[in-house]
Length: 126
Image (cartoon, rainbow, N blue to C red; front, side, top):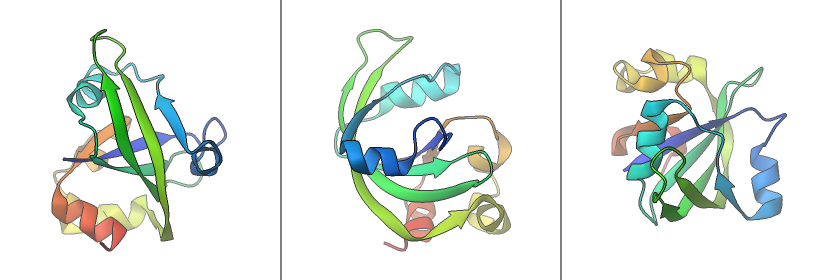
């Protein structure tokens, strides 16, 4: 599975992750988003998406480890991947039929969104 992680760039940006190399993804409280965090497995692909004024996928990351011993606050360690060659905006995502039923479009406030292989490939170009 692939996932998209939303973050407010003024709080923690992809540039911060590039600097830090790894981080614990925390601060997630929505039950559906927490469920997605608990389901993550090491090696899975992540997209980092900037909310706020940007509203765009900007880079990749990978799940390093998941500690789901506390079901309300799973600790997911991630490591930085690569910046996307060009950010992919929410408007571009919404306009593509691949995302018609995606929680990214249907549940705008969901901070952890599963992506299928075709959605991942379309956004990343991989």
